[in-house]
Length: 613
Image (tube, rainbow, N blue to C red; front, side, top):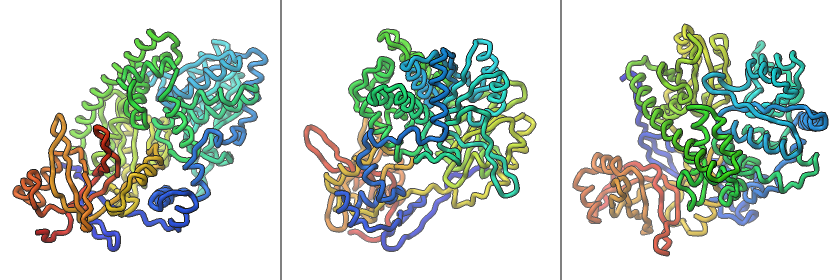
């Protein structure tokens, strides 16, 4: 096979030593006076260390630990916010018609909803357009501008797109329209010598915290976050109570989670308060979608939003039109909402089936492909809307940057979507190939592009030739927050750790490690016999239950490392020689009113060989 799996790496770390197999286990070594921080903020030193590991300055601890809505930044700190508000207020006073143009993913749909409902609330004449993924492509285009002019639209308001739409917005200005861009994507640039010259579209106001001239305190908002800041500013101008603007937080939270932006600073405030609101939502469309996913009696977390609710909203934009999801959100009749929710859930089931087929074909493609640092996978029959998901799945398996390319709607035009790994800035990589591309956009970890079919080979060669990643970069790193003995784990510590949620990009779920834990017993459980529960014992005699969700893999490794006889002893709970190093997350398992400390085992490895008996 041309493409090999992740190579095996074995290393010893002194002091907080961890023996590693298959992944690079790395202990974070950031320094601080953790005891002093513990005392100052009334948290365990372990929690203080986790926050420092997230690159959080102690000045931001209080904001992180107490993410109240009142701590949201003043929207007028964003460059061009005054101008955008003046334009929209003038349109309202003059009766001018505003058209919202969004992207077709979760972030785009939520941005569109927030702007549409918010503008209607302040008396604007407003409608919306969502580009069709296959017919229109990403973002606003010249056809959309032409139709807007024919419809008598005075002002174009983009959301979650527009920062790279130079041609389309130039056309809008030439036709006499006013343009307000709200976006969060990277600003395009050209390199002149050693300098980057950023290229902004010809808009009357551009709201984007990533502009180098914008001094907004936090630049990693999603598109819905930027849209929300605009509505916040407009509500203040119209003297609408601040509490009303909070009604949109559940929508901002969904977009923030699904667009995988950093769950820090203002985004953390959005998500924590938005999830709290979502769990008691009165919104007809969201409630119908929650019920259609069988989550009515579930406390919704970032997991349910990212892997259940969000993909359903995304599915309509992938397989048909994202308008279906927006109409669900705008629906006020419960029966109609239930029907529309069932429709998008059905689309998501179809999307999952097609994704599995695409992943299989991508894996087959790699079998015969020449070795590459950046995997460029051509799947001509793949639905172009699934390219990004498939790229993500392949990236997870091989830990390489992945670009999946499919046939587009136009003859001889291909469309691609990519997902990256740490250390490889995908948007910058595409910029270095821009002469071979028709269009491109994105950020460090994900990007989209189109190119002529005859340029695919040259593109593949160049993007690989310019890739500076080394073999070690393709070994996934498991970053351990603390080498913490299980004897240190207490219920109150677990509660403090869980209070750091929601977890995601920029606030990864913390993991801990201890070496040389004896495995006293093992039990295979679950309907599909896919869970193994073990009893672990540390050198000081502390015992604790652990659970791992890949029983077959666990069985195979224990037999391979220690032999069948030792594995059989485990299953009987007899004395044995099985000793493991583990990476874990501590939880409280509650059953029939009994609370038990339990370790969720994330990684494990054979401990250095020694005789236990």
